[in-house]
Length: 285
Image (cartoon, rainbow, N blue to C red; front, side, top):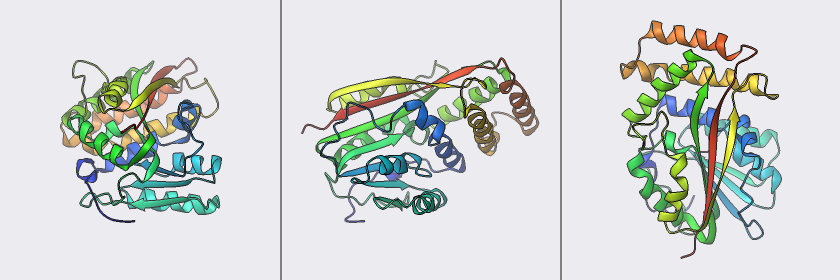
């Protein structure tokens, strides 16, 4: 990478739980729920260089590289394990136009200003405190070229027919609030996704728009949902040490809720939902 400039990583909450979350949020089921790799509002004709922040295993990064091999796509993440896996998969898939880099939370991002035509980030609210949004948006805008596009996608959990899983999700939200990651303390959700449009408008972007996408939890709703639910439960298990450390539950209760969730989520009449909001805006200054 090139010169070091302003700091983004100092705001990034790097924990074992956050790595599990990036794997989950960056999985294929989430990508398919969006319907396309990038919103149709983004003008791709002149795009040459794209940055994916918090790329995880590189699912989104590699998908864009497959669709547009003429564009250089760079994925960055704090986790060396995830970056190694992303690079391995790119090699297996023979992708020539994609690069992956680890950034250290103690170091600055080292891209020069106005380096990218598009900056993309998915589920950032899971890894930063709400108070950091304006400063992180400022850094992402620094990296964008004039006329470049910022795409911010975030997730909000809805409800399921599994009472046990809903209890676990509620504990997870308590953990998020403990990290300062909720801007809607009276709501059962983080509240960030619903405010992305306003964030981008306040940041001075133009042509700001957003789309809403359902994430279906119904076990029989579509191919791939069973695997998604498996990943969902595994992901929740990854948060166990964090929730125990915060005193939000005990091991026996947590394990019991996990086992009950496995039964309830796989019932033939099981259903539920979450949603993704994909907000986009153009840099005009």
